[in-house]
Structures are given as C-alpha cells and as structure tokens.
Length: 569
Image (cartoon, rainbow, N blue to C red):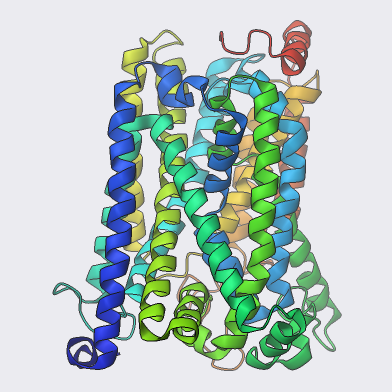
C-alpha cells in the first residue's frame, strides 16, 4: 500500500477511519485499566496485596483472570491463523490447549494449599531454601522473558498491519519499522506501569476486563461468520476447502503436522514425533507456567482455586470452540493465499476476516469498525498477558532472590514490595530491548519454547515435591537445570534455529543466517525428549543425595489436602 493511497484515495479514507476507531478503542481500554491500577495502589500495602491481590478474589473472578492470562495473542490470533492456513492441523492446537486444563483441575487445590506467592515456595517448604529458590527463580525468569519477547514483537507486527504500514506508508511521520519500535516501547511502558502501581490487584482486573472483551468480540465475529453461511457448517467447510487451496485435504489431518514423506520413512517418523512433542508441551506446560501458577494464590482457599479452574475450563472451552469458525471462515472469505501474503504465520487472519465480514454485512463503515474492534482487542490481549508475565518474573526475583537469598528470609515487607517494583522495571526494560532487537525475526517459536521449558523444568518439581517422599534439593536443581538446559540445547540444534529451507522458493526459514547449519535433530518441538530428561535428572539427583526429611514431607501432604498453615511461611 503506497503513501499516496494513505493520503488521498477512498481506500485511504477508509483506513483513516479504521485508525480513528482502533486508536480510540485502545485508548479507552488503556485509560480504564490505568485508572484501575492507580486505584489498586491505594489498597496495595503489603506483600500479600502485591503478590496475591490480598487473596480476596472469588473463584469466578479468578476464573476470568485465568482465562485472560491463558488466552494470549498466540491463542486469539495464532490458532485461527494456523487453521486458516493449515486447516484441520491448526485445530489441534486448540485441542492441546484445552486438554491441558483437565490436568490443571486436580492440581489447582493442591498447589494453592502448598504455596504462597511463587513456584519456589512449594519445594522450599521441605528443602534447602536458598538453592531451591535460586534454581526456580532462574527458570521462572527465563520462561517469562521468552514469552514476553514473543508477545511484544507480536504487538509491533499487529500495529503495522492495523495501520496499513506493512506494505509501505507512514503514520505520524514514522515508517513501518519506527512504528513497530514505538508500539513495543509503549506496550512495555504500560506493562511496567500496571505492575508497579497495582501489583496483582491491577493485573487481575486487567485480565478480567480483557477476558470479557475478548470473549464478547470473538463471539460476535463467530456469529457474523455463521450468519454469512446461513449457520450451515457444511457450507463453511466447503468454502474453507476451496479458499484454502488444498481441496478436501484442507479438512483432513497431515497437511502441516505429522506430514507423510513419501519414500522417506525416517522423515515421516520424525514428523509424527514432532507432532506428539508439540502436544506434550502444550498439555504438560500449562500447569507449570509461572504466570498461571501464581493465579492460584489470589483466592482465599483451595476450594476457590478448584472453582476458578472449572470456570476457566468452561470459558476457554467456549473460546476454542469458536476458533474453527474463525479459522475456516478466514480461509473461505479471505483466502489462505491472501492471508499468507500478509503474514506467513497467519497472525493477520482474524483482523482480515473481521474487515471482510464487516464489509459484507455493513459496507465500508462496517469493515472499518470490525477491523478496529478486533485489532484493539488483540492489542488489549497482548497488553494483559505481558503484565501478568512481568508480575510473575518480578515476584520471583523479589520474593525468592531478594527476600529469601539476599535477606536470608527476613526482609521487611515494604522492602520486598519495593524491590518487586524495581524488578518490574528491569524485566520490562530487558524485554523491550530484546523485542526491539529481534522484531524482524520470526519469534513465534518462543511461545512453544516457554511451554516446553515449563513442562521440562517446572513440572517435575511440582509433581515430585508433592508426591515423592525421597525428593530433595539436589533433585530440584537437577530437574530445573537439567530440563532447562536440555530444552534450550535441543531447540538450538533444531530446524527452528538453522538448516530449514523452503523446498520451493529456497528461502531460509530458520532464525540463524542460511550459511549457519548446526541442525542435528530434525524436530522443532523439544518437549518429547526434554520432559523425560527433566524427570530423570530430578530422580537421579535425589537418589545421589543423602538429604532426607520425611517429617516435612508428611506435613506438606497434610497441608496440600487441608490448606492448614498455607499462608504462614
């Protein structure tokens, strides 16, 4: 799109109207949430208020907040985009994300009863606290920063598409690259402000508002898509098969995941294993994501934590039932080819679908309003998730590193909360710098990497701390450092980093330059190997250590079932 079009033609007028609507909606969301953050500051006095929102949220409120935390841009934009490009295989992501919560449900009450503020609180109850907290803090910050960078780069890309700058043109005198940098900086500053001023209370209300808006906007777009196809699923699927460019194969498995390689059984095997590995990361990583875990501490007791997960399953399930309508609708109404031209990863599918649906139902004005609404919701989604991630990482740094290592577990609450606010600035600043540096790279793999690290490094710690009497400090360190190292190493040696070439165009699809090829494992998802490594390292480390404390384990088991004494340590 040329600068001339933006300045003078009817198309430019329509895009200008879209800008006005989108910017207005975004400013309204930011204004409302900043007011909430400032008001939350007045009631955020101690560590319990800052880290856990005073433990005053109900199961329903926390369920909405969990939904908001979990439905990131990868869910809202990514899954529908993958369905629009890859058909049936894209829907497998929805299945994996939803099934994960069936594992979270039986764990929610146990985790609420056995921890206080961070992941490290659980194993530190029965082990050598400093070593355990250091290990957990390292992995928590690593997962959060990876996830943060991916979300913030996505914010920059989304703003360029929203303003029509991905094909040229300027906005407020800035070109596409400068606008992307500005979007990343603004998102980073806002997430720091939310955490610094309001802590968990502000973050929770931000997630609640975002979840309601996201579900409402997704529901509206889904209904409009179905109206255009007369609520006939067969017509929708037929249109998607035609628009997807693959015919009936678009509606069948094997187009993108677990692809059959004729005449190459080894390649076929690795493709199948890669699909299984992806599902493993999505299912097992969810329960151990730091920003999800700390949400269980915002409710008054274990029963409320379990209730919040039940509410989350219902809302997340409803959302993922709508993603096929959005994905197949985008393929049918927009076309997979157009979507891939705008963004090869498909993240623009939902905004493009919203614009097309608006045009078909209400003309140019409807197109502008729908595109603005969906784009504003997408930006709100990113903003809410990065705030939760920043809070999780700053909480771990302040509570675990400062409070229990540097201050030997005896800090003043005012000191610890002050350090947490400073850590939010540090984490936010680092995330901004990294996102600006890699904004032109395809960083979508970082979301999957965060899930894989959580599954390999955090899940063994959570499960074995609660259910294995012999588990000890060396086991925690083995799980965290072993799982983290294995995941990073396998990802480094995978096609994501080097050696992946498009067989048709010859384009380099990896992160590193084409002349670097260190690929050893032909799989893009490391969880299938990294998760067993994490558990093996945990078991071996525990068995090689002579440390034992069965009394503390017994007390922990009682606490996990009753909640007795959970808020005292």
